[in-house]
Length: 244
Image (cartoon, rainbow, N blue to C red; front, side, top):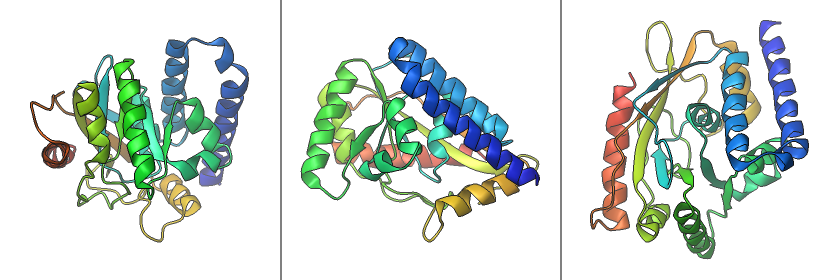
């Protein structure tokens, strides 16, 4: 009953977010929209009893490209609760009921991951957004992992920061048990996991904490996208260890 109540409260919160995007966002400034997204994400974590611990300092203003490891569908909510940013996500997300509306309302950029030409288009679109002063966020692994190891970083989207001459901030997140600080697998969304199964498992566990560790903002300093991506992968891996 406790878990079902949290699920129903979360669904109601999603519906409130959907209503806000459709009927309130047109009257709000970009800054007000960003603030609403951050508050909405923070409240969802509270509704679902997920503690948030932020270490380090997120970038105050753009342009900046943030890069992070990827564990769960919950990652985006957690990062939005630390500061607003525009995520780059797979195009299928746009078609998800309710979730697609929330993602689009939060300023998500969509990419067809299997289409090389679309990757080139996305790099240009991201570079334009960075030149306009936006804060973007990507998961360079390209898919979710188990929270223990990390997959190699894809370099394509890092090119946008090089083209825009914009800095990058590495960050890492980890889900842990709030009492023991041991890695928690409750929120993982990998392999054969289903979205509903992952949500149900997340709501069942008690004492779940999301730890976000922000690193130092850095520039390319002449590195190619592949060199920078490799260095950023090492930086994020070190930050992920610091979460524990």
